[in-house]
Length: 321
Image (cartoon, helix red, strand yellow):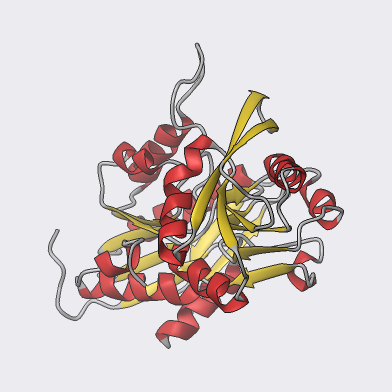
């Protein structure tokens, strides 16, 4: 695709996480694009782009968090409006990629919804996707357009180091998260333990065994998301029963559905760190137990480098700071 040398960079936001979009624009020292989005009485979504985007390099910031279907549809409608307005390139900035857990056929007659979402985004007119901490890295392969996959690890590592926790051990809450936890442990120069769990039905997990020695250590659970917090609670109880001194946790995406908020507030966890990929509700953003780390500089820098056609590999390389 050819780009003119003087193409403008424009950033628009859906309604899923407008504060993150404003902080990204603040980092880039540019105004947020002007658009009108509202619902008709039957809940259909209306979008109107209120400025000229012809020939522009446009970025649309919209995590597909709850309500996932509404936010996804809003993103698609915005992309269609921009495409029909002759934007030169449209990049969907999706800090949290919804339906990411449905990435394979794990039983008969079920969909691979992550692939379906990729197909829909491409059909709507998306030229590129910028996302963070996909539930499964292979989701990148579902797209036939470029996908830039960032990691919140560097942001988390800096925070954990500042805590100065003694006798630290990194915990993977399940076998699927071992690669992520190992990278954390390597960067923090500490040991690693794994929770062996068994999941019988969706959103319910049972912690079984701990692989590794956690006795008298400060355990730090690292995960890509916290949904109902069932896995987190099981892991916390198992670690404390195995002799851990205290338990902390961090995640990239605070999905926090169902009983998650109540579970976290009533748990023996000492702290939970997360990012602003998804906006917190229920007063959790003010809860002293929750630490929200901003990914606006990370996304803003990635957007700038994509626009300037320069390398962003140092941003999504999880082994570098």
